[in-house]
Image (cartoon, one colour):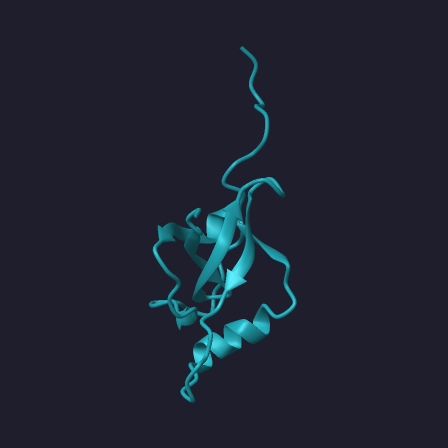
Length: 112
């Protein structure tokens, strides 16, 4: 039996920290983006619902794969099992958003 990989992906989006779980994470799709597929949300067998996870589940409903800008990714961990997906406020955040700047640029502008 093969192990099923689960990845915890933490990234920034619009002044908030998103923490999601996925079965597949790669850098294949677009230059400068991390591709996340097969998002995993906890199965609810009890009456208690986590409103934060439900909000994320609604936000990503119908999404086959999502692309996160590489500079927005805080951390990617391979974990033993999924936890609760959540959105938290970025501490010390203000109403000023930083201008998105590319971290990597293809090619070189100088000659040898």
